[in-house]
Every structure is written in structure tokens, then in C-alpha cells.
Image (cartoon, rainbow, N blue to C red; front, side, top):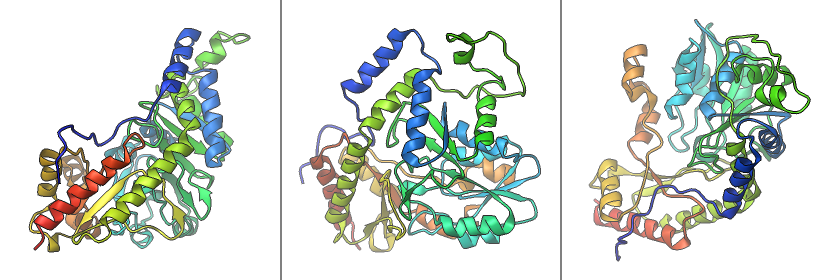
Length: 389
């Protein structure tokens, strides 16, 4: 195959003049921080996912931290989550003073294994944080059953899961605290940003207060027409609010979410079709109970059928074929902090270790062209064929 000379980025935002125009409108309005635009964005997300309430925040990490804090998780508690996730999932558990406890995954899907969750429960366990990996939902009926029997809180990490469905309903509609990400690589982006959803009005109000220094009034309430300059600090809170600039981007992105999801789905199907008969590679196994958001296209190598390992495969894609890739994720028990602080060892999670050593995230985003997908798939095919055992 002819190799491209221009580098194909791993990810690139999907924008047009709509995003530019709405940001300019906010800039010209004179109100840049949290205000009416952010309130509208919260309503839009809540309606879309099927939650009663939503709180726009500076990141998904902020949402996760507030969800743990406002559920009363703290020192001496344990929280069960997956080792196959970004560090923020467990870092926020540590930040509230609790201990992250990892439960192994199903290496064919990347999703946390409910049986492994149950095996890790102790008298100190207070919560479960399932991660909807790559855009597929965890088996929430099984996890809800475990939580109900043991009296545990569920906080869903839906950083990959805007538009994901579980048994016909969107992730975020369960009533649990659910954390979404709008980072630059996500299905919609506000550059940086996140959203916390829930059906519990008191929980969301508590989180809202804690997201802005623990103040009883936000800036919009104090400085808007009819507002009051008086406020009370009722708790030692954080600076986690988002801005109307970011929220305007979010609203513009929501207007084209259906279009972007259609393209993601089309490209994912192209990868499936183009790689179906390539020996030594496969994509994640689809779950039977839901629809993916197609956030990631995770290529799984069967290294028993290849004469090179995953890292060499990546080098070839990047350096010889000019394709940007990523790996989701380096498991948390492999990072120095978790090894030194909690005595973690990746060998304790054989399914996670097996998956990590075989995976590559291929480019999958709406601003790609169909010919880009064809090129990536052709490169995977050529490498797999050349280095077949």
C-alpha cells in the first residue's frame, strides 16, 4: 500500500462556524463565567440522558470527586472500581480519603466483572464506581443487585458514555450519580468540562454548593439583575464550576450530536468489516444488552499469531504509516503511586494485564474521512500479514 505523508491525528474536534459563533456571542455578552448559558446546557444534558438534574462542572474529575464527597465517602472507606481506567477514577477516591479497591475485568469487553466486584466487598466497602469503558455499558443490573444486597452507593463513570444505552435507556437515566466528560477527545467537547447527573435534588444541590467554594449563592445569583450581594459560606468547598464560554460550546456540540454519533457508528462498522478476516487482530466484543457510543475503537492483538508485540505494532503504525494512536489504558496497578501507596501489582488482575498487553486505540472521530478509516485498516492488515507467525 502507498503510505501517507501527512500524519493522521489520533483525535481532532468536530467543529464548524456554529461553535465559533456561539463563543463569540458569549464573549460579546460580557458574561463569561457560569450563567444562563450554563443553566441551559445543564437542562439539555439532563433531558438527553434522562436524568432529573444535572450540574455542569470544570471536568469529569470534578464530578467524580463531588459525587464521592457528597455521598459521604471518606477516611476508612473502601470504593471498588476497575483497574482498566484513567487515573482520575481512582485519584478522586484517594482525594476524599478512601481506599480504591480494584476488581478485575472481562478482557473481551474491558468492562468490570460483577463477580469480581462481589469478591472484593468487605465491611469497609461503601461504594462501587463502574466505568462504562470505550462507550459500552457495564452490566448494571448485576451491579445494582450487588449494591442493593450490600447497601452500597453506585457512582457511574460515564466519561466514555454520552449516548450509550443500557437495555434501551441512556446511561445517566438510572438515578445514580453519573459523571460525564467533555474533554477534547470525547463525543462532545467543551475543551475541558464535565457534568454530574442524578435524580436526587438534595444531592445535586449539595454538589452545586460544594462546586463553588461552599457558597450559598453563585456569581450569577449575586450579580445578575434582582440578585443580592449577600452570601454565606456554608462549607469548605472547591472551585469546580464551569463557564458560559465552555457551555456554549457544549450546546453547539449537542446540536450535532446525532450527526456525530451516526458518523462514529459508520466508521466503527467500517473497521469491523475491513478487519473481520485479518488474522491476529479483533475489536472488542460487543455487549448484548446495550448500544455503544463508539467512543473508542480498541484493536486487540492476538500476539500468539504475530511475531511482534503490541509496542512494536504501535511503532510501525505511528512511524511508518503516519497514524496517531493511543492505549486505553495503562492499568492503575502498574503506576508507581498505586504500587507504592497501596501495594498494588498488575499480576493480581490477570484479565486486565492480558488485555493491556494486547490493545491499541485506533483513530475514531467524526472529522475523519472514510478514506482515513480505510487507510488505517489497510495499515493494520499489512502489518498483521507481514508479521504473521
